[in-house]
Length: 125
Image 1 (cartoon, one colour):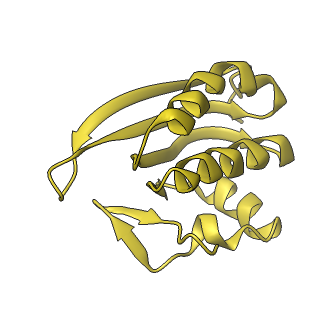
Image 2 (image 1 turned 180 degrees about the horizontal axis):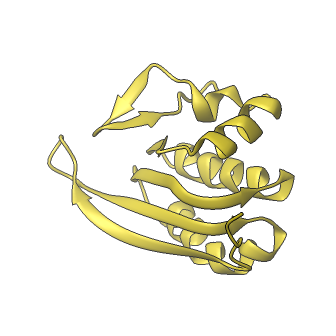
């Protein structure tokens, strides 16, 4: 059994979008739960302040996700979409995909839209 990190981290990487703009790739790792909120707040603020942000959220290194973590992801999604941006969640590990599916958050796991290589959430999701 692997040890579960007791904290979360987020690393931001800028990238050029297909439309010639600049987007952000956020690599999340560790636990995404209530304790992760202070570490993710700067990302939430940046997303809420940016106009038409293209954001790719890499979940590949997430070890644990609970209902508070799902709330954080939905708040991030809403902040980006409210400002006219696009958001994609990618690299779901099987255990994280199961949590999202069991929580009936289908929009985070299955979406037909793609932005610069990631699965995007439609505004109606």
